[in-house]
Image (tube, rainbow, N blue to C red; front, side, top):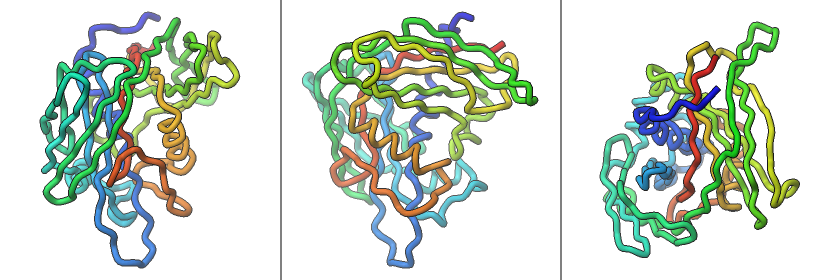
Length: 284
């Protein structure tokens, strides 16, 4: 099955889904006085040199649940009064608010291996900053996706892919995201995406290939699936691994509080500049 190309509306929607999937975990209630909220940063490059930043604030475990309305929660925790500037080798770029804590910039000439600084100023929450380096893009060599019937009345999506790993140490993130336009807002609190993290220890400098399935059991013929592959930093790999190990959904927080690593000075979250290779499939 060949990837569906030229799906511009879906490409524009994906950054919203991806960064919404990085909403902060609720902070555990301990009976202590509430701490001052902090800014939480999430970021996503669109392959056409556009950048989306999501700014939210930390919130308590009692502020959200599985029954929380996504729109209401986003309105509650979105940071909408910020000035957001990205500084790179070629100058400063001001990102513009597009609502619900999202800030976007277009035609930013990101260069592989170059460092860029994010600076955020909020009248209510103060300032945060972060510096990161644009990662080398990695692309799928082969990829296919189709429906898989497991014999138990479940319909899964099966993805088979391969890519070439370069000789240096690398860390990768693979994301799959079902796209049903009518469900995007409902899934912001409980994203039905699947994230797989890869460390190239066992395949350094060679081809890597695998087939996996699962991560949702109610696919239908005609559903659209987005699959992305990105080369990420070791620090972000560690950050994401902790999130995946300790969180089931955005609105569920279990066991003890976890101090996630962060590259945001004065805040939380992660500022990344990796360019994903994104492919779309209509499943049959």
